[in-house]
Image 1 (cartoon, one colour):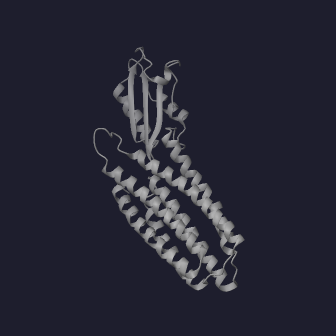
Image 2: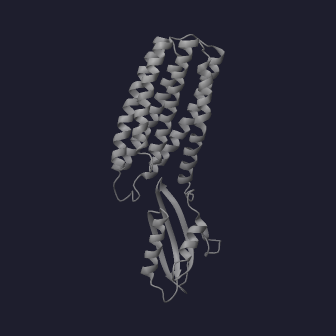
Image 3: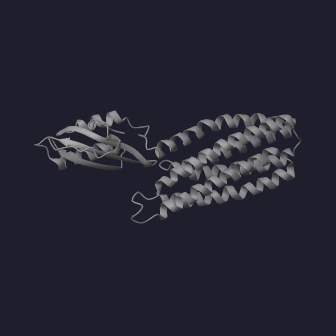
Length: 300
């Protein structure tokens, strides 16, 4: 799915989540339900994350000019990192609310709370479905999706709490379920933050084995040596490879480059830049990281 389509999905998702957050705030006040107010807080935080993702996506789509040769795709990753930090805050907020409910349980209007929570669940499922279709190759949208999943869990917890309050007057259902949600959120939050930092720090993508990439390049007919091998990501799903390749005197540089580009595409690497050098060609240590290192065999 293109970024323009993702932009439309994020816009619709933002207004749905932001609008229903106010419905839950009013409903929480009228029913005296901390669960609904808590879920409304979740939705407001998520609407902020969706707004961040929306703005980032808009800038990425509109970014043009010679000064932005890679576009502003890194902005997507920054937005995802901010969203991950928000998720950490959300876990803390849920935990705090759970403790408060353990200490001070209050009666609520169960049936009304249950109705609002069910509608909230339907809204989250609709938004989640739309974002899920756009999230496969976009870490920014995926991060927003995780927020909506959190909301969905919150709505389910509110529904279960409403059932417990309505049928059995069991007011401690809210804090118990809130703590369970906090535990479920943490792994996804860690995944988003780790993946974002890996991209921003220009580490090798976790699904690629750099030694295997080098081995494949060396196996190309005519290749004698490989150095200055770098593999990193601009954003999620957009991997870059650059390398200096030494070829034998009788090798065809054009054929070698075609072979390397083909094997890179097979590995999911979208951007490949190869500098071919004939065997015996003097190799200069142009990489600043190599000033005091042996030139051959260096890679990131």
